[in-house]
Image (cartoon, rainbow, N blue to C red; front, side):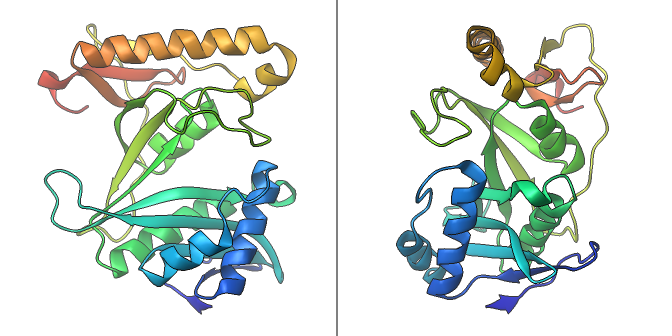
Length: 252
């Protein structure tokens, strides 16, 4: 296991790059704990990917593994010459959640991608999860590339079991940047379309499955209709609604 440049702002935290089969097995174990599933990413697949230039990292706090990230190598995105790094999963165990470790892992991933010649980093997230929308779009400053219906098909982990895996795909531009830049909330214009997020979809999925499913259906319909009409996400407003704007109007 080796280190890579990245922020070390949390007391007792270190982030190390995975290089060995034992590292891959530990990442797999961490993912299984975070997502309450068995073999979410098999160690064997991870070893093969790491051997061929993929990214794996383990976050340690006070000598204990508390989080991990894994990303695979992809072809350059449209208009790019450098390869893309697609972040398949990044997670923090429940006992260490909400302490900034997830943010530190993403910054470490950004730094590693820059050092290894990647032009972009992409990943997906569930657009119904408000805190993830804020984290990815505002705090990490990503660009939303589009909405994908049932991206992974049916999932059976402890978080997503029984859910349609609709996802937003987001992108970081790496070249020429030392760190990602956070963005502000967006003020909607008259012709923009707003797509709402529930306050806590994770709680709804436990307490009112019908209402949770209704949120998915309404949000999916809104995103797909807007994209069909040439609108794309330019950010979040202060009510945690996605702001979709005509592509002809450009960015924010």
